[in-house]
Structure formats: structure tokens, C-alpha cells
Length: 337
Image (tube, rainbow, N blue to C red; front, side, top):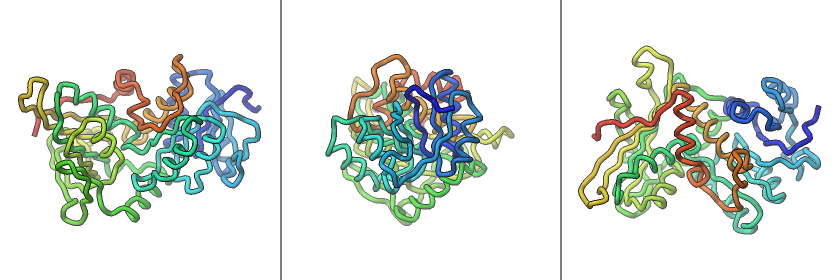
């Protein structure tokens, strides 16, 4: 039976993160209707059957209405690289908030252009921060004792047993192929690290030394603008996470190192880590679901106003960290390096 009230539309909702997002929304809001959109109608219906108040629909990327007719969602999220910008065009032309999570930092021009030509239409969220807000929300929370930040170093650790779904693999293959250098801010200037200059080491939560490489994440630009830090870099490593070294299941870790001055002007260093026991996908779904609830006003507040946003501008920091804790994750305080 077709859902009659305004639903949340998950384009590509049949994938691993889409299904986790649907479950997260359903857990927080038992009656919000969901449209699980996919290119394969049978798979979309199968995914919708996993939760109540959900309907599977076929997405037609060549149609202006995505094949949805007169349906008008409260908000739209897309979980794969949408080269045609089909979901963005559909949403923005109708004044519907939109969240995309699969683009690279070098692919933001179409979304920026769409916003610039109709800035009053609806909210557009550039959701391709690492794990959709997990890094930036935690970093900004960890930065509260600082009066001034000089350096931010992020080390994302993905367990080599944490495979994700096909769309995730496609995204990483595309980003690695098209953007081998890592956008970095160093001493106030933006530059690109590549080759040996992009090779790094950082320490996991349990102190194990991890070998990684620079990664071009939009977190670099967002954190630099938000904090004024003159040096910001993002590095990525794949290996055994601290939980698995303890004999527990895989997890995901984000290591955050901060250097600056406290509010009295004295030198200050801090190191923190975001931990989620389920791995990267459920942490991503947490951010997506909370952004969608804010965009649509499901939490009781007014829907997000038209604008162009980073995830950390939409997410409520305290609410996010509380939801992370409820899911078994945490923002840990570690000894500075």
C-alpha cells in the first residue's frame, strides 16, 4: 500500500548504509513513513519489508520526478555517487532538503552551483565529511578548551574486515583513481600531499602504530574554516582496530590530535578518539539519520532553513554524542602524543 503522508526518501536505500539509516530513523521515530528507493524495484521492496511504515519504489534517474509522480518527500538522501544529480535536481527544484554523502571534495561544484542559482529553495548538505559528521562534531567538541587552534591532525582507522557495501567500494575506487593527492592546510596555505609526502603513521586507541596515507576529505576545509587552524590534515589507514586486537569484533576509530593555546594563552595539546563498536557503516548511518530528522523537523523543531551546509552545521553536537553513546560508541580522551 502506498504511503500517503510526507515520507523521507532514501535514494539507494537498498544498500548497507541505506538500510542502517532506515533502521536508525525507525528506532527514533516509529511512525515516520519512509520511501526506500532503488534502481531495482524488487530489491527496494525487499528492503522496505524489513521495517514497518516503509515502501519500496523504483528510481528513474532520467525522469524529472524520479518516477515518483506527485509524491513530495520531507527530505531526500542519496547513498551513491549521483553523476546525473538526479536526486539533487528533483529535491532542489521542489524546495526539498537534500543530503548527498558520496562525492569527493573535488566534486562539490555542481551542488554549489545548484545552491547559488536558487539559494532560497531548500537546504543542501555536503554530507561527504568522513562518516557524515563523526569527525567534525567530535573535533569541535574536543576543541572547546582551546582559545586558539594551530594544528588539527585526523587519523581515520578502518578495520580491514570492515568491507561496507558495493556502493562504498565504488566510491573509494573512484576517489582513489581521480584524487591521488590529499588536500591539506599547512601554515595557512592549502596544498596537496602526494607520493612519499602523503605517507604517515599515527597511533590507534590502544597505542598500536598504524601506517596510513593522506586522504582528501572535505573535513579539512570545514574544520579549517570553523576553527581558524592554520594546519589541518586528514589521514586514512586500514588495518586491525584496537577492539579486534583485544579479541573483540571489528570497530572503527577516528583519532583527533589538537595543538594550540588555552583561553589564557598557554600551550595546550589534546588527543581524542571517536569509537564505534559496529564499524564505519552504522556510524555513517547515525549521522545521515540525524541530519535527515533535522532537515525534516522530525525532532520537533522547525525544518532546516534553505542554505548550503556542512553536516556539523546541521547536527546538534550534544544530541549526536548522546546518540553515539547510546549506540555503544564514545568520544574518548587519550594521552597527547
